[in-house]
Length: 150
Image (cartoon, rainbow, N blue to C red; front, side):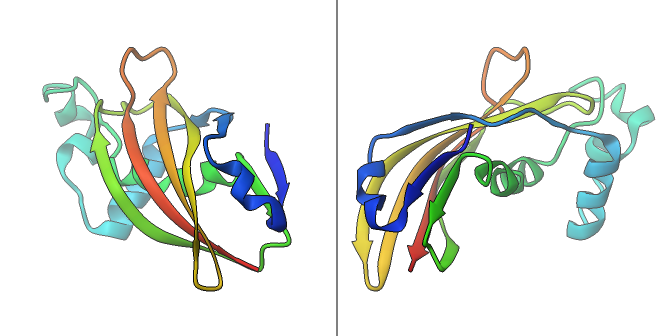
């Protein structure tokens, strides 16, 4: 469920657990498209036959594909009404804890760790966890930084 908040109330987000997104399917087509976009065609990502004998027994999503999916997933968690511009400011920390096998489903949970004022707006530090349906460890954990301007 999406948390909706007014821009004027953004400071109240500090410490808020936003819950989890819906699940997203990780298909071979999605992995291949990412491989083409990034020119990373390592066999563990794009060659299902060869990957059967690899370390994961199947193809897996690129770590940076998993990270990039945090952007559309984030949109399911928070809507700041009255915000004019929202920008990705960067990452303080990212870890790819578990591989994401083709055919799996992922979702993201997020907690707003901090909200600070910056010139012309606010910065959110968000602790993101991407988990694999049925998995025992997360696929990715990160602290993402976003800037929000009126």
